[in-house]
Image 1 (tube, rainbow, N blue to C red):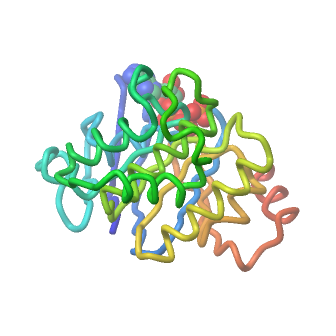
Image 2: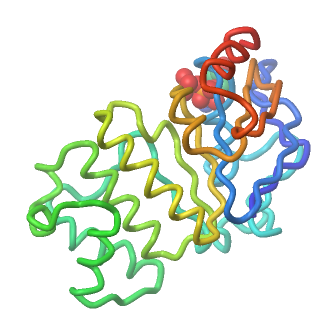
Length: 231
Ligand SMILES: Nc1ncnc2c1ncn2[C@@H]1O[C@H](COP(=O)(O)OP(=O)(O)OP(=O)(O)O)[C@@H](O)[C@H]1O
């Protein structure tokens, strides 16, 4: 579970995130929408422990991120806009390395199954990452998240730059991860994808979470209108 309690980040006199209160339960996908600079990445970085809150607390499974930065890592997987892995290692080797860091020792067969589940074509398993497309790298990132049995998944603009098919496949995999009980926080600019994949959608403006909507209660068009009115 992810929880923010009065979570605030200021840079000098500028408030990047203003007293965020939010709970994301296991199995839930929460999409954060908002213009450039609204505070989405700041929120994710606070949950990752990349940056310290000025006030308030980010909790993962009830554990304070700032207080226990190492401990929370075992619950977390993170997929940034561009997944950075080792370019000289193959997809299989990257997955083996990163899952071993998390304490898992998978067989070659299991590693292959994880990559296949993430939607990577088998002919790419043995190819070096340097030759992968963005979507292929993301699939390895997803396979790593699954391999780590992460309870919490943080995604920062995961579908930006993906073609529609890759983006659709991505939604399917994210939903299936949530179906297995992962709590997911996703920052995105893609209103359509947010509506399609998320259980709840939050709209941020200037560091404030302005509104939270049940995705099932709104059409994509209505969401777009609300978004445009809000930001
Ligand atoms: N290290 C930093 N130092 C100073 N200001 C920062 C820093 N990081 C972020 N900010 C500011 O905090 C605010 C929120 O930025 P953030 O990156 O969270 O926005 P975002 O919603 O993720 O935007 P985008 O959609 O462009 O990724 C912005 O005004 C940004 O300039």
